[in-house]
Image 1 (tube, rainbow, N blue to C red):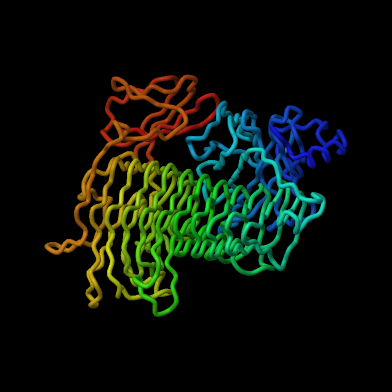
Image 2: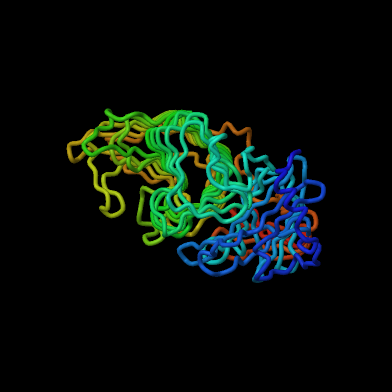
Length: 599
């Protein structure tokens, strides 16, 4: 394992008191969010302090402290959502072969907590008196979200990114920030940097943001071929700047990897226009408050891969669009194809999590996939909840006729979302703010949803809905059908989709003139109909609920949230229960968990 030699040398000059002081890591304090610049003696992990000059966007210190191995604090940053609840985020680096203990001290006491997603490689999860949380994280390249008391919008949330240790580029003078001509590298080391005129990267050039760096700027990436944007630092754009934070155009290759993008004003975060053959991985995007804060927008792109991204946006997390000059037809514009997303984590505070459309002036959308991914939270609209039928977590929305086919969603977990799936043709977007005509032909077909699970019912009328809206062309425009759609082991709120007559499926078919047809329902999942919904297992055996070992108390609720039974110990008798879906909340080794079961 190699550690950045410059950082290691700098640490040797720091006073022992920086890490030698005695701290109560279980207790939150106002100062400890600033973090420590620290390298573990065994090289297992590294933390980075918030640099001097960085301005807390809302003048409120983060309401969490995060420490590693009771040795050093992680530097934390903050923004807010539309309810002015804090979005706190931070990161540390760890060796590939390491396992470290993370401790989270909270400002306020909590009754329960959840760590998302549920398939993380963590262990020994525990809580200390409702004031702190500990767990072991067993490998890097994991993104964790901590939600307290099931409050996704009204109280503080923590996003913690665990990165692998990596070596930075070799520039002539690593103490000098800016452009290194010899290596064609923009280098920004630990510290706060202002580059108000922006940074332009092209060809084979490199932009590196070191761990511990915050760069207030925006980046234009033009005609990149083999260049690279990477590092673990933060690119921050506030209201003193304007434009797209990372604007990619005409790239034929290259990599974006590891950095954090934090936009603190209206507008899109990261865009790709007419790009191809790019790799994007381990990117984090956070912008939870401002207008039109799409995480990623794509326009006429081909053959690109996205892996292990975290996106929290106050709009679409991902939007695959078709934005053309006025007067263009879909047939005149390129197709978008060969776009593959895997191990994504998405949180949309308002709009779609993963959307194709709504602007769709393109000759087609094909060979697109989203696999092994988590939608942690998705709220349909801040100001008009339950009124926008064309929004959903997994969404295809066509405003200008086009063809959508060979699209695959597989192994997707919806943790807390409203409408699950939507396929629709429309000509009026957001109450007339965009009006189009479906003058071009189109079709949606050969689309597969496999192993999709939604764990919760949000209580809204569109929760877990699947929506189809074909186009009948009553205005003389071409009719557009939706057909040959496969639902393979799709389980919403504990109940599998098995028929087009399922009341959760809403459509606009006309009797005797069906444009939505050949909708197939199957299960090739080898019997795994209802995936596990909690880190501990509750089993149903012989009419009794068998709790995990170490359970001290439990409560059973029906699907409406009414308490049915409560007790202590390892078992619960289900005699007299009406068949249906139940939620079991249980306390095991001080940790409150919940699981959904069909009885």
